Image (cartoon, rainbow over all chains, first blue to last red; front, side, top):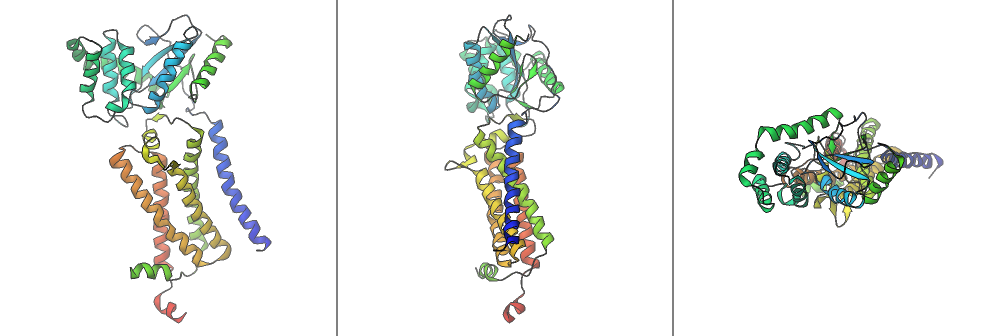
Length: 219
Length: 161
């Protein structure tokens, strides 16, 4: 093999190596959130809030009950709000990816809001995430959610009335519209003290971020 | 069967560099696309759910790996083989190498058909990166068909040779 051939092949392998290296570097550096994501509105009494008001860190999540990634973050958030209860509060906002790719997401959001009317939002939130694989592809998801409502001892007449009410649909749409305005295009999208973050990989990374924000004294 | 034997044994005429460079570019796009998913897999990234599709459903499904090997890695290896074949042809001008690289595109199109079937009928969600790979492997297969149709040595010349 002469020098020309060797240079030819080195050039070829260099191009491939450059592609792999470039992708790896870009994926490590580039934030997994789009540019120009805005600042969400402050949490108010109409929001679903877990944790005390006087804490240094507020996490706002734009989420979809049918999103597998949101379900993966659900236990992380649970642990955070328990183990860092003096530093963090959590706000859940709806961002159902309906009708595609998540056909039952809007009904799950309606079920959570109907439960919220009876003070059981977080109980329904837990049931929806913990049983996501049971109802995600179902054609009778609303009936499954009624089962969850019964298990929470909700007033079923009120639940059924609220489930399809214009008020609840408007409440969900309000969150979704704000998410759209902010530039949210995927779930979960987390904001820590009003700033969008790159989704942390696991509890430890999330906790470190919360601790750093808390010690930074922001808000 | 005879047709297959004919295809495997019949030599190709010289294929223009422009066509081979086209194959290289398409295979490079496919390689980059698959490599992106391979890196994401090994980084342990939890793919978020996006407005534009269900990548997370496809990439977290049981069909995303075969005996623990991510299918994206198999895809990257496939494109790598096509790239090596096309590049070796540019280097040596041996049509036999290009012929085998082009025949190899059959695996790409068969795998693509399987993944489209899975996404449409089983997972019922679509991943834009997977569809990108379906596109590149289809273009490669069609190009291979063009190469075999247009640049085969016809029977008379073959007999003389």
